[in-house]
Figure 1 (cartoon, rainbow, N blue to C red):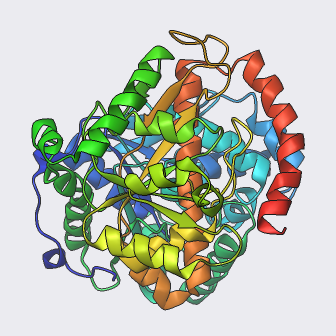
Figure 2 (cartoon, rainbow, N blue to C red):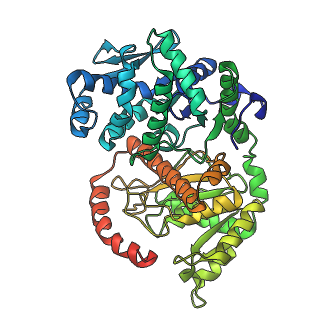
Figure 3 (cartoon, rainbow, N blue to C red):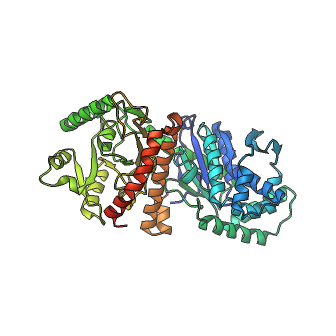
Length: 492
């Protein structure tokens, strides 16, 4: 449900917000994203990054150079070599294009009318996203735009989707122009905002949409102060929930059944032998009732990811072929509470059993791509993850595995063996999305976010240990081989 008043959320403790937090504020034009993001940055002592200003700066430069907003190649060429910088200045953001201050000239009606088309081009967005991610990975930032939470930073600490009625947004935008001494027709302005909403929502690349884990805030009837207070409280929801999780390893160990101790001991020994490195989890037990969603690259993945659980009882979904009566593996998997699932079609029994377990507080390991993928190329997430989320509302912890091939005692420089845990994804906006669209589309949104989270974790891994020639060569070979298997397994 959308929140419409500060009293709809508890105040929270600002001390729980991490110093390296990333706050993503998305929403349509005129919803107050920029002013609210600046206020949040000042309130929490973070750096404000106006991503919309980056697109406006390119739009202004294109208009000045006679480049048409529809010319994607020319726009990308114009942006590529430019030094585009954002600097805080007295509560505002100074936008520098090759050292020149363009902060005021990018806020004209001409730029406003063309920026949506400029920002719709895939190559332009790719170049901009790279710049934005480089700024945001330093941490301690507030970013605003239209796809920050879903594309640029899928693992943001807090995500806010700020919206308001077209009439409220047109009124605010009209007052902004008046304050700058620019006269505009309010009726035409409202029509322009509605058209821009349509363009932003229907564009093929990174359309304006609500991220399933965002907190939706409708500010149509709020004052500026009320809007900022409500958004500040929204920023503290996830940190407050994180602080309430019991991470006591001793308590978790005492509650662990004997078979899990044996299994995790074996898995841990294998992982240590091959030099597995773990990031983002620090050996803590997984919180109860959480879906652990891992990418799938090799047959070793269940053992390697299982080595990082150590102190948590985790059920898992495994392909039904492994549970054949003649296979000892099936009895072993059942011993560890695994659930057989058919990969062709919808397996109602498997999903019902998994959902019931989640509602009882059990954890669930799932490889939602459904089959192995080429390394470095996370695949499409199947609808199963979205079904589980919609049925249970269980939070999801994305897990990225790297290095299942090329294993060596003590570790391999050709194929670094790493597991990266991302922050928990909580589904604040799923109810809002279900009011607007079909359940299948909501499942797709959930899957897209999970895949984007893997992509971000992969980028962090590659930043620390760049992709190797061994991985590049193997990936190219696998991309050719796996396509046929994908079609066979899922009848595509």
